[in-house]
Amino acid sequence: MIRKWVSRGMLPQVALGFSLLIMLTAQAWALVIFVRHGLSTLVFPYPLDYGEGPVLDQAVRLADFENVYRADLWTSPYVVANYPPLFELVEVPFVWLFGPAFWYGRAISLASVLAVAVLITLTLHTLTKNKIGAVVGGLAFLSILYVLSWSGYARVDSLGLVLCCAGLFVVACWPERRRAVIIAALLLLGAAYTCQTYIMVAPFAAFVWLLAQGQHRRAGELAGVFWRLGLALFLILNVLTDGGFFFNTVISNINEFRWQRLSYYVSEMQEVMPYLLLTGGAFWLLPWWKWVKSLSRSGLWRRIRPERYFQLG
Image 1 (spheres, helix red, strand yellow):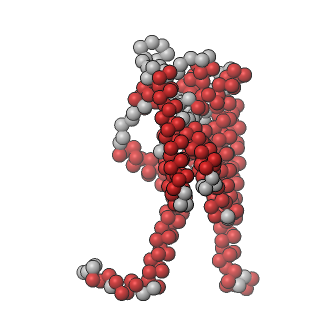
Image 2 (image 1 turned 180 degrees about the horizontal axis):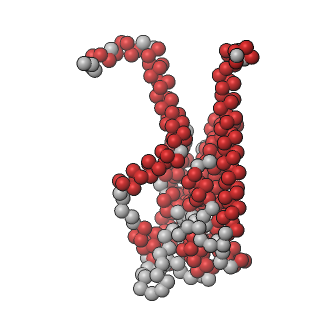
Image 3 (image 1 turned 60 degrees about the horizontal axis):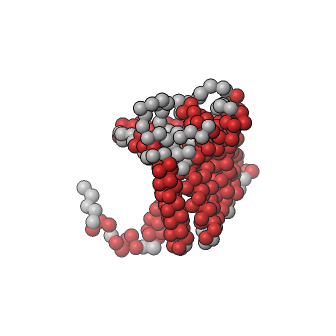
């Protein structure tokens, strides 16, 4: 019946278009859920997560020009400032204007998540020149359950992530420009001083990308600006707080590694986003599959004669 209306050559295009329509519909509905969830978090006056209270407390104390990175906990307040200060410093003007509240921290997180989706779209378009694929990639980020739940929390993670994505976008667009590389290093450094877990992956990815583009000098400049300025800021903050910055952000944050916890999170990801993991793995394996096919077509595989090395039975 279908062949009467569609020629055989058009069937792959029709199937692709139908699949794309289903995906975009699901992602549009995920975007609606994201907006509804975000609006509901903004009007909720109480903590949604155990970490929102300490972050707001640190912002209020910074607004009063207090030291939140105390070197000891022998006197009150008996709290640890787990993260570097950038997110709390962004909240400080809102504390001065509106007093202590959770809504502006959540607004910063929601705006950061939306900005990450936009940056993913722009980065994919820069690398692939495929508009549809870029839009699908940006919307896919907003469709992830973890992103939906964490986007409404007044916590540091979303702001750090958008700074990472901004740095990577700048590097992807202008890898040959010295000024762009310096700006990217500053953005990545801002992410590290928002949440210290961003100190490795994104800077290393930017460094490797520059090397892959043949921009060895720019890669060295990126690493130099990031690590030199980052170390200088660390020393300054540590001196100003009498060692409290290192004590709070490093010593007090050391957690025991457990394989059981890793296994739990892996199994949870398989349940929450199985199709995303499968498609991501397929795209990772696709270049290897093309290499095997080209190897077999060239006749080299027959000349190698793998039965010499592998005996079956």
